[in-house]
Length: 326
Image (cartoon, rainbow, N blue to C red; front, side, top):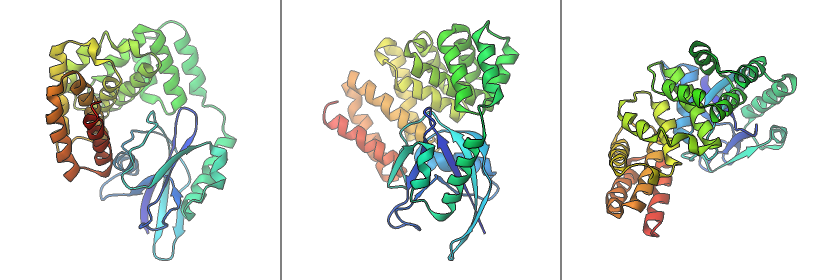
């Protein structure tokens, strides 16, 4: 029996992500929920987070679980462990699959899934039909609609978030209340890995709602990038920077940012999404400083020979834009 995890990933519209298997794979051209096999010594939660990062270059928050599915395909038996997850990332970078779709849950029944994934889809539909919104969402709404709570309460709320809706309440509050925004930024640099991950994730969502919020803090973030040990927090902060207007920071910080992003691209340990965001940032800087173009092109060309499929796809996009002059 092979232990395999999969993720029912939801976006902000409550649509679900499905991916199509390749022609040369088992169950070719069938659709499935992304995931993969457990590695030795790895927890089920660690496995699904790793698999989604490797296959799709997406970051997820695990919100719940669905019943385990055991299925005999004839040539192999699998034990499929499904998780319900939320993500801010709308555009996965495919490394193993042919295509992806975001679809409303009610359309899952019409998808040409692999046999085991049919049962996962059915379980998910049963779950959402039987459940109402989590009570904690209403609590978050009430707490954040008034005065800012004390530091301990806000930390607890951020750490216990288990859904996109809860993240939305906190992000909306941060977009409207500078005190909440400042606290989320402070938590993003903490040594508590779970708090830093959740805080930076919600901070990114708040910046999507109101991009102007980040500019008073952008140079401070760039100064602290080198100190961040938490890969998840680094990813979220780089995502924020990649969507920002870099003309609004000093030339000195352009240099710091360029050095940091080139270092991440050349690192053998940086996560796929971190490299992808670093490429986007460097592309923006190369538009302003054409002397960076050759170094960026050379670094990306190196990655094309040793990087993942997702990085290769993103790298080729950047090279095309550089060749076209932006």
